[in-house]
Length: 86
Image 1 (cartoon, rainbow, N blue to C red):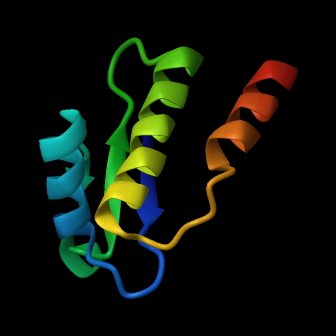
Image 2 (spheres, rainbow, N blue to C red):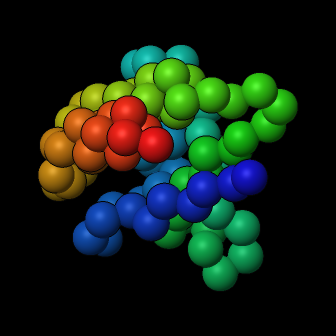
């Protein structure tokens, strides 16, 4: 499975990915083709469970704050609520 996340506003995905890698050692995939610098990818390879997903989403929200990206801060809570209710 693969998830692509569209960057909010006119923010570049590549600069965001660099910030998250530098600050939190979180490696995210780049957008390909027409999506280059518009999206980043969360790869789900092998054993990627709910707790790993929530940790990744936390890193993304922390990265948005660190990179000055304007985004809602309730995505992780919504994901946890969804995953707990399944």
